[in-house]
Length: 164
Ligand SMILES: [Zn+2]
Image (cartoon, rainbow, N blue to C red; front, side, top):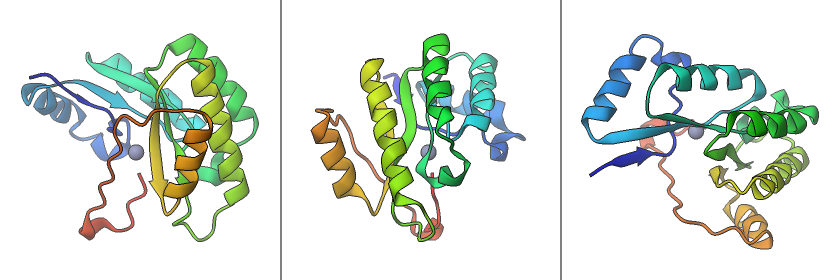
C-alpha cells in the first residue's frame, strides 16, 4: 500500500540534523508522497527548497493563523503569484486559531477567507489548522461549498501547546 502524508513540516529546523533519515524512513514505511505545508511568507523558500531536495515531496503554500502577526495584506497577492508559478498541490496551512488569547480574530477571519477564495479560484484543496474555532471554520467552508474529505485533529497530551 502506498501512503501519502498530507501534512509534515519537513522544512522546519527541527529536521536539520536528520531530514534525509526521516524521509528515507517514510519511504521505507510506504509513505511515497509527503506534502509539506507552509506557515508564512518567509518560510515559502524553505518549503520550496525541501521539495527540490527530495523526490516525493509536494508543497502547499499558505499563511498559518498562528503566525498572524507576521502576515501582511500584500502576502495574499504574493501567495496568488506563487501558486501560479509553483503549482502546489494545496493551499495550506490555513485556518482559524482562537485558542491563542492574544490574537487578532478579525485579521484571522480576513486572511482565512482570502485564502479560501484563492483555493477556489485555483481549484485547489486546503490543509486546515483549527483550534477552538471549529464552528466558525465549518460555517466558512459550507458558505463556500467546500467538501471536507477528512478532518483529523491530533493533540498529544504531552504537547498541549503544539500549534502546528
Ligand atoms: Zn502544520
